[in-house]
Length: 143
Image (tube, rainbow, N blue to C red; front, side, top):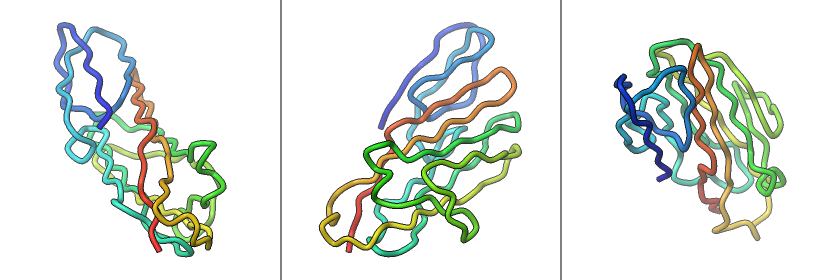
């Protein structure tokens, strides 16, 4: 789990991210991805040669956000992101209103030599006065 903490006068809800930028000083409780205001339910594994859910992003922030999910350069040859059944390539940006969720899938190439390797990706969100980054999230590839 990657963590970061911001210290100051204002208290924000718990957050799951590596770095954040806010317009004022803040204190943030650090929790795992699935319990955070930038809530990421990352799959434990994805299947080689199939389309599987990679991550579900839930916006528990107190503002609408723009979210970008991107495969890391060293993972882009292992598959393509899929949204609502459509391949979108190595990255995808979408609006996520407060209190809503969105599933992002990955179509993993059919290559059994990838068994046991990992796919790395980042999920970044920006909203009014807030930037949240969650780099180097990863899932294992299985046959």
